[in-house]
Image (cartoon, rainbow, N blue to C red; front, side):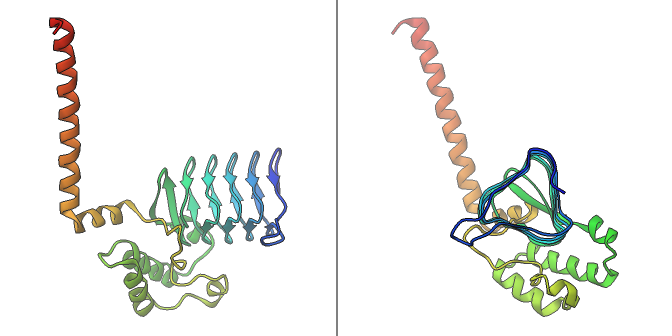
Length: 220
C-alpha cells in the first residue's frame, strides 16, 4: 500500500532498480530515493525521507519524520522511532531513536507479536548484551557472541542476519547510550581534559564580558 503524495524514484545505473517488497505500507509523504531496496512487510510512517541506496530489511518499522542517510541499512524486525536522524546502520531486532540516533534495547514487542520462540529471544538478548553492553571492542564482542550464542533459526538466517550485526562499514553501526558512557569510562583522562577546556573557555568568555562592561562604564 502506497498512500497519497509518496514518491518512489527509479534506480540509476549504479544498481539499475529500486525495489519495494510485498505487503509493505508507505504512509503519506514518504520518499524512497533511487536504488533503495525495501524488504517484505515493511511499514514506514508519514514524512520519512530516504536518501539513495538505503536498504530496509523485512518486518522493519520506521516511524514518521525520519531522515535516513544514503547507504544505511535498517535491519529486519527493527524499530526506528520518530524524528530521528538515521546516519548509521540499525542492527536487526533492535529499537533505535534520537538525533544522533542511539539504541534502546531489543524490539521485543514486535518479536512477541510475530510469535518468536522464547529460546530465540533469550539468545538475542544474550547477543545484545555481549555486543552492546560489554567492555569489549566491537570486533571482539561479535566474535564472542558467535561463540556463546546458539545459532538463530534457519528462517531468520536466510534473511542474511548474522549474529545481531552487520559487517562494520564506513558508516558504522548505531550504539546505545550505555555503550557511549562505557567508552568514556575507558578514557577518563579525555573526559577530564575536555571538562577543563570547557570550564576555561567559559571563564575566559565571562572575563571578557566583565572587562567590556567596565570599559563601557568607565570609558577607559
